[in-house]
Length: 486
Ligand code: ZN
Ligand code: CU
Image (tube, rainbow, N blue to C red):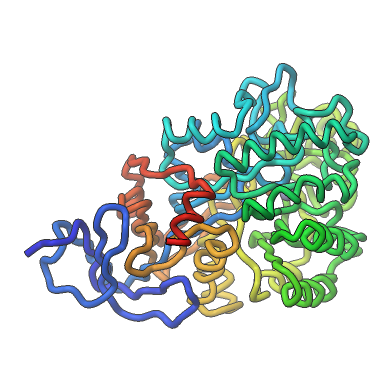
C-alpha cells in the first residue's frame, strides 16, 4: 500500500538541530515531510535508496548576490549542486529592487546587473516576477541600503538629508510590506560610506515592527574592525533589531590574528542582544576591482572586466607586467572590473568557522566571468574540507550552521530541519566523499558527493545532475510569520 508520494529509504538523518544523526526513512507528501521513522517497504509511490548517505535539510545560503541570477540562471546550478535550497539575496547593501536606473549603476551595484536590469521600481514587482518565473530554489530577499541611496539621492558622498531619509524609509516600507526579510548595508562601499549611523538607525527602526533583520557588510574589516562591530551592535540596540554581521573576517597582513579580539567581543554581544554572523570558507575575498585594495592583498585575480573581458581569470601582477605599467594603472585600464583578493590568514578563517554562532554564506558573485570558487564550492568545502578533513566540528554541527541556525535567524519557518510538517527542502549527500571541486583556476566546477536535492518536495538534483525542475519560490516574511504563529 503505497501511501506516500516519495520515500527516502535507509539514510542517516541529520536533522539540522545539532542532535546526533540517526537512521530513519523519510516520507514526503506534496511539499512537506510527513514522516521521519521506519516505514514498511513499498510505502512510497516512489522510493529512493539512500543507504550509506546522510539526509539533511537543504542548505540555506545566507549571504548571496543572486538577485538577478534567480531569473537569468533560474536552474541555479551553482547552488543546487551544493545542496543549497534557499538563498538570502540583497546582501552588502546591494539589491536589484526597489530601483530603476537610466544610467550605469555605480560600483558595487554593477556586480549584480546593468542599468537595464535595475527595472523594478517596487519590491513587490521584483517578488512578483519571481512568482511568475520561479527558480529552482527558494529566495528570501533583503532590501539594500545602497540601492535605496542610489534611488533617492543625487550625491552619494554625504549623509542623507531628512527628505531623503523619508524617501528611503518609504521605499523600505514598501519592500517590507511586500515581504522582504530585512535590510542590508554595505557601509564599506562608496555609495554608503558617507552614511552615518543615525541614517542607518532611521531606516532600521522600520524593521522592529515588521519583525525583520538587519545585515551588514561593516564599514571596516581591517584596522578598525572592532569599531565597526561596535557600530553594528549599536544599530541593533538603538533600533531594537536583530543584526547579522556579514562575511566576518579581518583583512590585511597587519590584522592577521585579530579574530582573537573580534570573536570574544562577538560572544559577549550574542549574550546581550540578537547578533548573528556568517562566513565563507576561503582566505581570499572578492568584490569590485579597486586600486586602493591592491597593496593590502598578497595577490589579486581579475574576475571580470568590462573594458578588457579577455583578462578575466588572470593575475593583476601578470597583466601589469605584460602592459609594462604599474598595478594601479592596470586597475584603471580594466575598469569597471572585479577581483579576488588574497587578504586573510587561514588561522583566522578557521577560528571564525569554528565559532559556534557562525552561519555559512557563500557571498558568491554569479555574474562574474571568472568567479571566486566560493560560488560553486562553499557548502561542500565546509562539509568535506573543514569538517571531515580538518575536523573543525562534527558533521551534525556543520549541518546545523547551514540549516537550523540560519532558518531561525532569518525567520524561515518550517525550513532548515528534517521533521514532520517541515517543507521538504532536503540535501542527500555522501559524508565520505562530499568535497568542493571549484578552484581559483576552474571556478565553475560542481562539487562531488551531493547525491539528491529536493526543494518543496520536488527533486531538483538527482544522482548528481539537475532535473530541470523549478519548484522554488519567493519566501515572504509575513507568510512565514503567520505559519510560525499557527
Ligand atoms: Zn560584502
Ligand atoms: Cu556580499
